[in-house]
Length: 424
Image 1 (cartoon, rainbow, N blue to C red):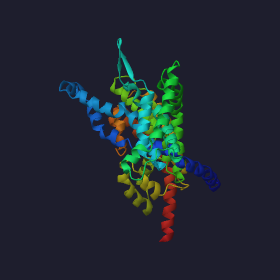
Image 2: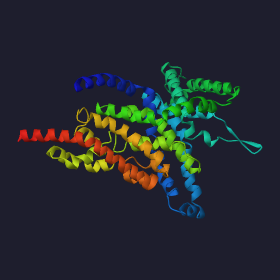
Image 3: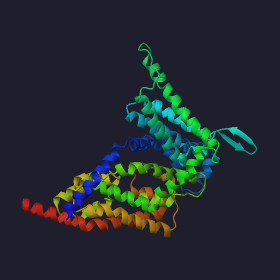
């Protein structure tokens, strides 16, 4: 029966995964967000220092004149993140299509700025400025639309040779700069028409339209806790079949970025954070790596077989730093019938428990700690993020994961032990 179920799932999962992996837009989005890592991680030290949970520390920083500079580091990363996103996605999209990524990226960035309001009213005076509120996480949906539309149109026009042809004697640098000029004119002309068209509507700017009509409903669905738990479940199903979970999680990364960056922005301004609960449930429900294998590692302490005793030694140190590939491929967990149920259901149970816990138990939350490297041990990360309350939740979930994995591991361990006895 299990073999029939496995075959049926594989017949369904593999084609879907292949289509998602081959989708040019999803690949560009995923690669674009990865390209932002040097910006967010490079400035993390300033964010952490400026928000350490030490009474009076931030007052001391302000007193010695460093608080404004630390806040500027935060502004340079998360508060204007859309500028980087709109360039990076278009850049990767064009590169994947063998076109000039740098040119496409700059056209996308310029088009994004063309669409947004370019003045700010201060009192009775209107000054020329780009509102920073349109450059942060709240504009991520618009950046996705602009970068992908520009990327598709730019590549299509270039592939149709709608370019400014230069003589062979002209230097390559000049040729590469001038050839796309007709393409740029077409793209900017269409974006200008969009901006002008919206100026005659009640929205005035496309930024307002996208925010109210597209972004809010999309985020309401994408940031719902049941949807995020389902994403984890589906990722683990794919991973069990050997298909990397990034196939599912890659497209969702933009929503996670919106939640994380919006929380950081609100936190820095002392405002109420909107996405604390869904983001924490998603992140904490997946502790131990895809498949929640930290519980499996702890179960392996009781191993009787030589095989799993040795595997425990090999996997222990990497797993402390959230690297669970030694278990995924070494056990192996992939296509191993002993571990299908705990691997796919652990995150669902953990998500529900975390959801209930976070709604009942009071806790504080510092979203800056989400910028810590993904290799930060979970017990350290969530203690820094939310103190004792989140640390207790992590301990509860690890214990729960271990209880779920243990009986299935014992079946696998006993089978390995029998094989070793027969081999001897």
